[in-house]
Length: 403
Image (cartoon, rainbow, N blue to C red):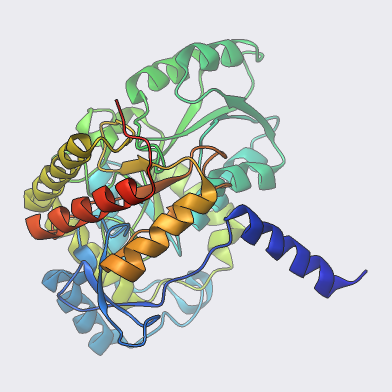
């Protein structure tokens, strides 16, 4: 086999379809989010970032930076190994206690990323329970799909947020079968929200474990940032709440929360936890500071949602199609991969606005989009500049306007 020719042909196929991914060389600037330096341009011009998952700008928050500096000076750079080998740092213990409290659970367990927490936990639970069947929402994240696949358990996919379909599929399984219902609260591409209460009702009826990914909701919803499950008063009904430290909390890492017994089970059997070097103490300290701050401050959430409303109103005034949803995610629909990439390039090169094109396989073909995430730190001038740029680009390209 001509390996080089094979690789080249596959890459060329991506380019021909307009789906070849190009990474912008951006450098975040301390204290100036959402402004970043574009090292991909000769003059290193500043750009405004409109697609960051640092939803609340906590990656630049003084309390987070101070906690990380203190931990770095106190403990050094790394964790020294896995928690089984090098021991558990006090910052890990403090962060897990903070997370358990956030979701009203008995215990929490840290992982190196949200991807790993989903993959390791779902693969462990489904593999260890004999005959387990996982009922997975059709739009679940790749990390959840990978965990279920790795478990080799039977996976039954139910139509996205379709309770009747979930009920039908649960009812078709023998009553004594171990079952896990895996779903998300906020789905990151469309921005829609799961009916958590109704799913929990079905889980109770059919004696299933509920596994909820709150990655795009923690920090953003609920009076203390506990996610949609906290906002809706459902946290106690969900068996496993999974989340990330890399989005609204501004650092890196993932976690699960649940009963002490379930968390200990995952800690003891999940190879993704056992064999991974632990998060650096400074990261854990920064995450704890972010969570603690957002438990008591609603200012960031309120400002973010106000900016979401401003952007949506401006898009409506321009007649630019965007998916309506009840979340903080604003998907502007383009529906063509090459055009989506071209608009993204134009925004960056001519307007100093950075937003990545979202193409297949992240979203289905024909639903390509620009995914905007207004933060509390985007000013009115930033929103006005973005709307002006989009209006000009839509006119220049003779793009259809929403009715």
